[in-house]
Image (tube, rainbow, N blue to C red; front, side, top):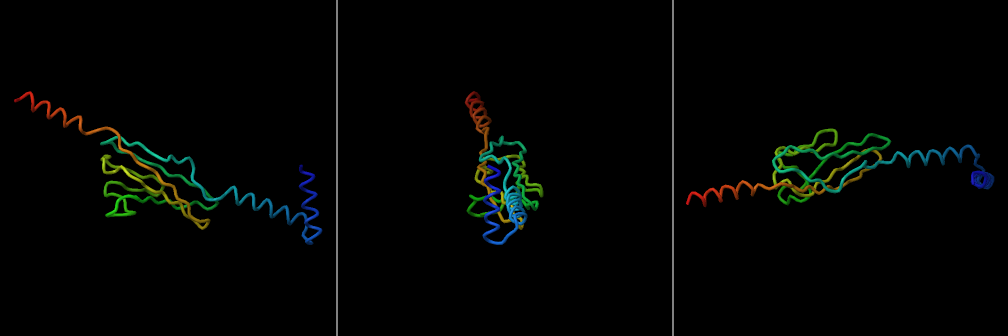
Length: 146
């Protein structure tokens, strides 16, 4: 296979007056650039956050040039793109939730950008755990007092 590939490159060079070395250099360069394209690393499509806890959702990307990472919220019609007041993104691609509330559930987007381009990934955040446990205990206690 290697001999056949080299033979093809050699024929290409003769036909177009390139040197074998220059063609091989371009092929290697193209392969290296492809290997270093901007891409996300091990992102989950959804995250479950525990109600009332502090939680972090992480976004990681790599490329030939280290990308800039930023987060936004996609489904808040009043503040489209903005993060809620008690949710903040740090410079390392982490999205921090302070005392998770049910209103934090929704769709968030991580954007990685550099001179290589821009890629996005969407993450669905679900809030697990219920606050109705405490409400039912209060109602039950109220019934007993009657």
